[in-house]
Amino acid sequence: CLLFKNHHHNNNNNKIHIQNKPGIPKGSLGWPFLGETLAFIASGYSSRPVTFMNNRKSLYGSVFKTNILGTPIIVSTDSDVNKVVLQNHGNTFVPAYPKSITELLGSFSILQMNGNFQKRIHSIIGAFLKSPGLKARITTDIQNTVKLRLSNWNTSKLVYVQTETKQITFEVLVKVLMSVGPGEDLKILKREFEEFIKALICIPVKLPGTRLYKSLKAREKLLKIVSKIVEERRSTAAEEEKASPRDAVDVLLQDNDVVQGLPLDFISSHIIELMIPGEETVPMAMTLAVKFLSDCPVALAQMMEENMELKKQKDDSGEEYTWTDYMSLLFTQNVISETLRMANIINGVWRKAQKDVEIKGYLIPQGWCVLASFISVHMDENNYTNAHQFDPWRWEGIGSGSKNQNFTPFGGGQRLCPGIELARLEISIFLHHLVTTYKWGAERDEIIHFPTVRMRRKLPIAIAKH
Ligand code: HEM
Image 1 (spheres, rainbow, N blue to C red):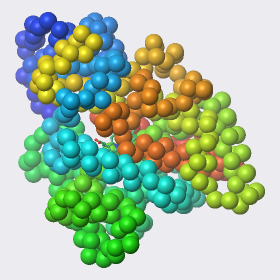
Image 2 (image 1 turned 90 degrees about the horizontal axis):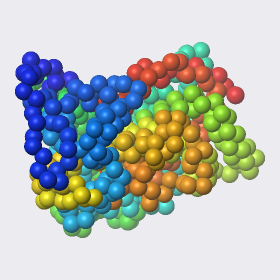
Image 3 (image 1 turned 180 degrees about the horizontal axis):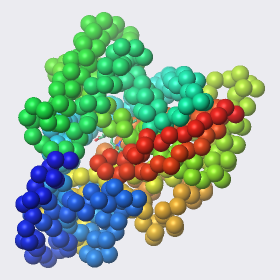
Image 4 (image 1 turned 90 degrees about the vertical axis):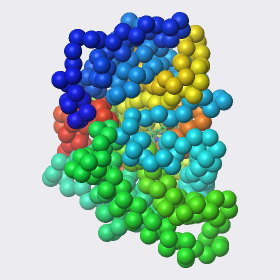
């Protein structure tokens, strides 16, 4: 990314060494401007992205300071400290992402909102995503999308798992958010959305031709399409339809009518911003599950057996699958937990302290950013024996409850991901139909962790029908 290359020549030998105030975590802020960004990125491109954190943890302790992506920041690799940051009693911590992310999100994005507004949006979206009505409907929708996509796979060609899962999850996402089905609108939304998020970590300059400029342009186009949908909905929605919302547009319109009276543009931008957390995360979890299973035939065999059993039962009885059918596949759920632990799709969350806070003897001074590093906790040998090994059996009898502070792929506390159940359902449905329809062999590929988690070659697999 340009940000880092451009300033390379500014390097000189003046490494910054800030004197430690008592209690401020130890650590090095690295070079002027660049800080320790290069080491951080290099680690993100290696097969052990946690190395950056581990090296500093062994030098300075489990909470340390550094300077990455243009931000001096205190990093916590300690799950007790992370818990306090996530719980955020007294609203001490506000979200604080690098500048290009905040530019793109817009100030009303739930990911950067604070206080009552965030709580309100969080609770209505969470309530909708967890409602039994949505669960029943969306289970069928997801199944149809997955089955149709899988049936189009060609056994004589390589299948790129990352591309396929992105298509599936995008379709599900726009269905949940705005009830758009397959067709021209979906294609345009996908194209513009992909353009929009490309700049999530890049140079924060809005000149024509730059990544951010292009992305903000794409955002304008998206806003137009979504606003049209929202407007049509508002003018046609009958009272009874509003009573049980069909999608996030209904939910926000309903809420808007009751309390806010905000312009429709606000609702449309909320919808776009709600696409961000669900768009990359779910397909990457699916893709990495396929990757880890390909590398662990014993786990794949056990998972296949469990899923074949359910399929047979359904075929024999002629009954429809329900949400709970998928959730009752215990080994498959363990595979998903283990995938999320190792994948670290969201490797941590960024916050800024609004006042001085002391946690476990570490001072986080007012105005400092904090990165609660999930990857460090998930890959810590003290929490998980052979942490770099894919071992779904380690979850047997433990489960993946939200009380486990050493397992936070969905964050926690005040901002715990409201899409948690939907995400697990989507992954379960995809894996069920994949393993009961096809056998496969994966080609060599590598996981890259920066700026976001992805496969270098989009994970090509050769498939054969059972
Ligand atoms: C495997 C998939 C997913 C992972 C790993 C994931 C992870 C996360 C994490 C770690 C957070 C907390 C961010 C923070 O504390 O700043 C979060 C928040 C959020 N997620 Fe997810 N997510 C996933 C899927 C989804 C889906 C499918 C949706 C919805 C369609 C969704 C919607 C949200 C929203 C709206 C927030 C913001 C909540 C708030 O700030 O109040 N996520 N997610």
